[in-house]
Length: 134
Image (cartoon, rainbow, N blue to C red; front, side):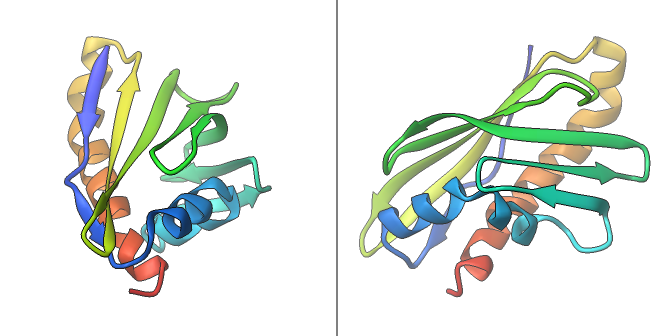
């Protein structure tokens, strides 16, 4: 099992607002790096997109602990099975959050994708305050 954690980020919004934002899969696109994905499709419960014009990634909400954790799981067609958790906690007047990915990746593929995935999750965590407007 490959385990990847993003850097922690601070959002100057109440935890309920951050949780609600992340529970709507239509908002996940706002966290992705522009020009690095295509074919975005989403509903409130799931999304899919193509990265590097090669791999389609599908995500759906599979667990939701109000104001603390949201779990997204890969859907059929993703290149490997994984879960992506968002952990949230109150921090002063804002919300602290980070992404945690657990993936079933073979060792050869892990060498190629672990670094880029870590960079992506750090980027997404860093984009959260911007996407939330503060």
